[in-house]
Image (cartoon, rainbow over all chains, first blue to last red):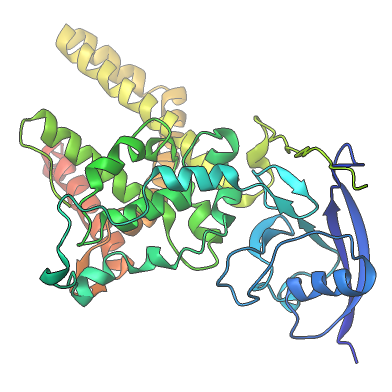
Amino acid sequence: MSYKTIELAILRYRPETDQAPWFQDYRIPCEEDWVVLDAINYVKDHLDSTLSYRWSCHMAVCGSCGMMIDGEPRLSCKTFLRDLPEGKIRIEPLANFPIERDLVVILDDFMEKLQRVKPYIIRKEERALDQGEHLQTPAQLARFMQYTHCINCCCCYSACPQYALIPEFLGPAALALAHRYNLDSRDQGREEREEVVASNIGIWDCAFADACSLVCPKHVDPAGAIQQMKIGSTIAWYLDHLGLGRKKT
Amino acid sequence: MIEKSLPKPFVREVARTTWYLTRRRDRMHMAQELSSIFIGGYALLLLWGVKALAAGPEAYQAFLTSLGSPLSLGLHWLVLAVTLFHTVSWFGVTPKAMPVQIGEAFLPGGIIVGGHYVVWIALSLFILFVAGVFNGG
């Protein structure tokens, strides 16, 4: 027995035939414990096999099922139907990215930006194997822990008004990950990242709308990371220009 | 034979002048950005006052008199309201910009926000004291 019948309006775009995206309505029976992804899977399995969308883990880990649900960027596997307002549910591909097909967007821009901030540990001197592992205290780990929860779902880019208006902007997730490595006690790459992070398409393009942090399904705070980097970068600039050398973080 | 389709991504245009009207959080963000103009404008007014002070007692008196006009008083109430909105909204997000880590934990955001209010009130009282408000003139 289904819990109730719901209506979905899903944005469709088939590049071979469509000049522009259009909404297709579906009525489906759903269960009380269903998330939006279950409803879309029902459409795919029972009503319309031509619908394209991305998903994998169904447990808010893989980061592939982000989409606009009633106008907000969310993970469809984490958004319960019972929590949405009554009425037709509007489902669109993530905003601020080009649509490849139906709910599938092209994320190449994010992938390229992510690489540019060098989101990995950079060492000036490599540690020899016989020197053992890099030790880290729980306090040193706590310093950057929340940023490691980012799953690259790109909901933050869809919420960011600056990214919408300035496509060159490196954006929330890439900058939050740059901050994550800058804060890591094992890392020595802050200055190397600074060239990109503090450039005119980096942290200074952020107007602190805070939308990225509000929509993040993993409770990461990219907006906070960017403001912290603005402060750090400003202090470093003054120290440099006062001849006091770069402050290590 | 399967015909290979050329990729034809669809780019959704952003309404460059009206994008913030849809969501409440975007409207609040733009209101906060707009409030900076009032604060900048008031800073210019204060600079004008300093210029009048440098020009001599008569010029300064004329400046003070102009501040008492109904239009000026109305604007002051408006700027006060906008400044309070600007201050309260920025104080609210200070824990994000300047988190304080103690050991493995972070200081609760409320303490950081509260600290800003304490400093704000203390500075305001100090300025009022210097201005002689507490000496009856």
